[in-house]
Length: 161
Image (cartoon, rainbow, N blue to C red; front, side, top):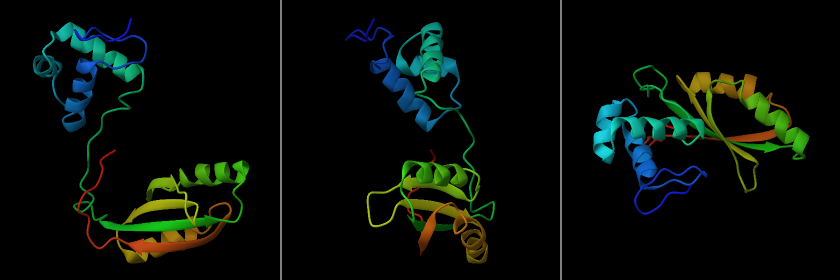
């Protein structure tokens, strides 16, 4: 069964307007009680719970978490690090990706179509700690040939993925 204009629940991976509304609302307030969520989307509690359960099971919602304030935690130094690899064959890329996952200071890692291979978002307490992370961890990652760093002077907007 697929979603239709009446908002019937989709079971084939397609999202209908109720599913999309649930996702939109929860992206802003993941702690919203199910009764309030149901009221806001215009369905009763049971079908809303069923939809939420399906959205979780199908991976549309990856989870719920608290969004911490890095500044209050003393972790407001952000640097972006370009990484060029010496080897870009699949085995080397996979070794690099797996090693990145073990460095907690690396908040984001993106493969880039550019003159370098990866862009890292690195969060530390200050420039001294960043330098340690760069020298001891990032530069030691598998197949790293060179790095280049850009320090964020101000964060205007930041994703809370």
